[in-house]
Length: 77
Image 1 (cartoon, helix red, strand yellow):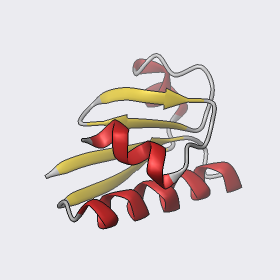
Image 2 (cartoon, rainbow, N blue to C red):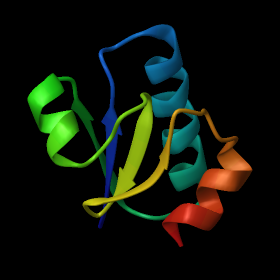
Image 3 (cartoon, helix red, strand yellow):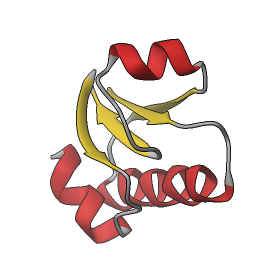
Image 4 (spheres, rainbow, N blue to C red):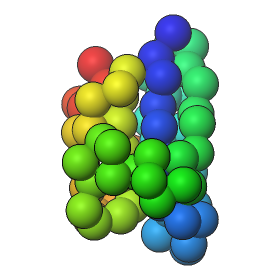
């Protein structure tokens, strides 16, 4: 199971990244869990300086942008 973490304060960009990540995982047919990380201290522990950010299995893959579902597929496989 892939663990997808969305780092951000819950803004519109964060919601869009969550939507895109879920869509990408569903299209790949993989089991996944999405966790929203909204605590600023937890976000900083990952080294994220710009939100939203996407971490896959604990590793930050992208920060400060909203990749498309197609781009996210490449990040989670």
